[in-house]
Figure (cartoon, rainbow, N blue to C red):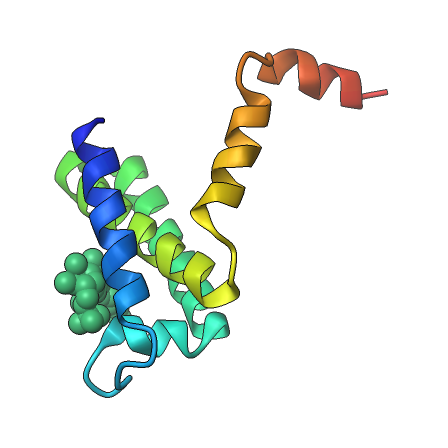
Length: 107
Ligand SMILES: N=c1c2ncn([C@@H]3O[C@H](COP(=O)(O)OP(=O)(O)OP(=O)(O)O)[C@@H](O)[C@H]3O)c2ncn1[C@@H]1O[C@H](COP(=O)(O)O)[C@@H](O)[C@H]1O
């Protein structure tokens, strides 16, 4: 398993463990209690990621990417979408050509 897979697994478990925790003491618990807030924060972090890339700021790009991954995991947990469901979507795309698929959808 890659280092990223391992840390994401640990983070997902930490997020699950925050269910029912006091939102005034845990940002994660606050996101879990409010999927709309989680979606908004994910959008903000995505924009900050795009800006970091545009500025060619490698360190900021890595840091903002970490924010995106954390907030995506929190949004999925808040919305009741399991990581297995996301994995199934990715698995279904394995081996397919993105370019060919896009072309087949274009009249
Ligand atoms: N990985 C994170 C993580 N990444 C970001 N954040 C929080 O997400 C919030 C982002 O909000 P803002 O964008 O408003 O804050 P900001 O990023 O400081 O502001 P900008 O620099 O973006 O303007 C901040 O409060 C960060 O602390 C995180 N909060 C928690 N975790 C993980 O979740 C675990 C549980 O933490 P609790 O949330 O405290 O239970 C932690 O041990 C970490 O592993």
